[in-house]
Image 1 (spheres, rainbow, N blue to C red):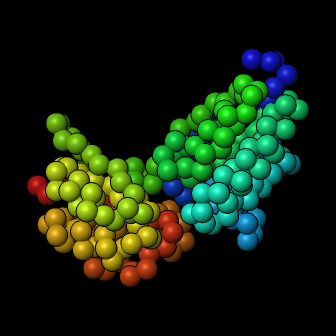
Image 2: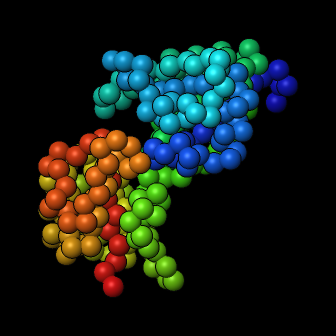
Length: 237
């Protein structure tokens, strides 16, 4: 690849606690030219940026990439292409850039869309990924929950799809993690009841942040969970 091109680093900043960034992530943040922070089109606030801030150079340039909060594929595609062009221009100028993402860059992350869109551009860019601690790993540690052991399996699912398929999966797996439980929470609770998994479910919201909630009884969880919410559903032993 051309030596003049900068490198794009996809950095997982973990679930919320700045101390949970990896040593490699902090080393990259201490040396990049530009930090890229995804935010809503409504404002420039980035939770990932606030988590990474203690490890960033005081004078590093921060570029905010705005993404609309919509599921309209045409609108989203246009936003990804626009932001990918911004990043591509920075890389062509030889700038090393760190794109910040909550948890891990390759698990339900905005970075995956950016990576795919950049790779569709003709120029072969330098892309390096720094894995991060996920919310469910941190939640398991916080609650002392064994996610899986021996010959057990572990399902990782999205609450955006609280469907009959999810019910069938819950009936056949040992342990499960459901992310994005801010969506369809009432339906998810019904699925837990129908699959006899309700008693083992643990609800976690805003782990490591202000307003943290850990509910070992799913009925104690708020009816409308925060965006940063998920559930651990270990096998009953």
